[in-house]
Image (cartoon, rainbow, N blue to C red; front, side, top):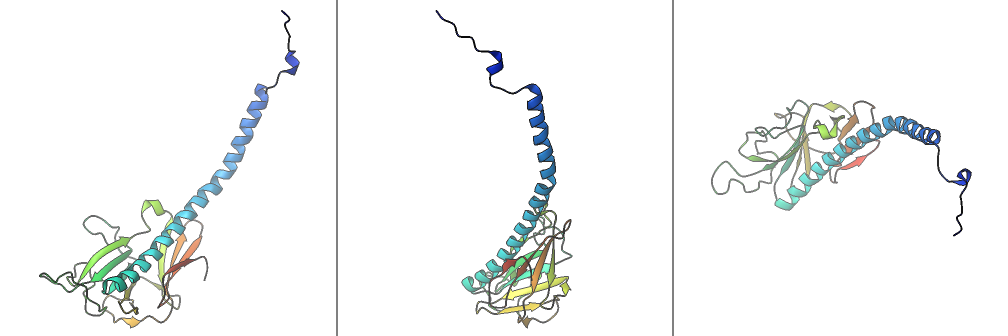
Length: 211
C-alpha cells in the first residue's frame, strides 16, 4: 500500500493570531456601528408614534362618517398617563351619543356642539386613546400646533358625518370651522429628529418629514 504524506506547509487554515485579529476587527466595527443603530431605532420609534397619531385622526374621521355620529379627538398636554381607571391620555377619541339613559343611550348623535365631551360626560363615550409617552415609543414627545404654528396645551378636533371639521382650543370655548391645517409635531427629545402629523380640513391626516 502506498501512503501519500501531505506536507504540513500545504495544509489550509488560519493561525490563532489571524483569528484573534479578525475577531478584534469585527468587535471594532460593531462598537462603531452600535450608537448609530441605537439612534436609528429611537428615530423609528418616533416615526411609529407619528403614524399611530395620524391613524387615530383618520380613524376618528372615518368612524364619524361611517356611524353617523360626531367624533372628537382631544389633545391634552397635561393629561395623566392612561390607566385602567382613566384610559384617557394625551390623545383621546370620544363619540357623541344620545344619552344619558335608556335604550337609546348609545345611539349616535351628529352634532359637535351639544355633547358633553368631558371624560364623565353622559352624551359622549370613550372610544380609544393613544399616548406617545409609553415606553415602547421613547424618546418621542408630542406637541400640538394650531394652523398658524402656535403651540396649544389643549385642542379638540371634531368630525361630523357630513365631512365637516371643527376645532377649539379650550374645553369651554366655542367650536369654529377648521379652515387651516393644524399639525402635531412628534420629536425625538434626544436628537430633535421630527415628524409632523398634518390634518387638512377635508382630508385625511398624514405624516410628513417637514413642513
